[in-house]
Amino acid sequence: MLGYAHPFLEGAPVTANDFRRMALALPETAENAHMDHPDFRVCGKIFATLGYPAQGWGMVKLTPEQQHYYSKDCPDGFVPVKGAWGRRGATSVHLKAVSKDAMQRAIAAAWRNTAPKRLAEQFGVDTAPRSYLGGVRPRRSRC
Image 1 (cartoon, helix red, strand yellow):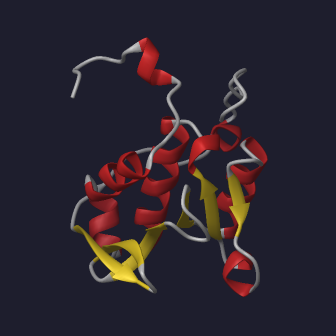
Image 2: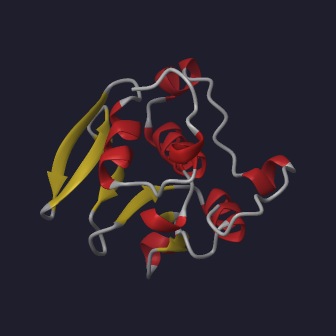
Image 3: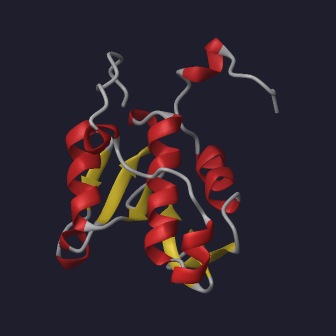
């Protein structure tokens, strides 16, 4: 892995391996399987999955408020899951449509939402979407 940001890689789409690395980098996270899809758990609770609803997609467990802002920032990348799960914040992510920064923030947010309070308090990474932070939306088409 490079120790610096490489301009060519900066705009590269998020891959399933990127998603997996981001999730597994978080404390006390383990990969497992649920309904024939890889999932990522903190202390036994699922916070993200890969390959659902199809290849090239993932799912993160956000709060409804987080889901609103991520979907607002990147409507092609972050889509509420259908039904009650989606109304509670479960959000499908089209990997090719999101930036690595947005994906990292969303996975970290899902982890914090799911982790036990004592563990989440130790993890001080900013997980808010850019619009929630008052930031400027990127000019490129991917968020």
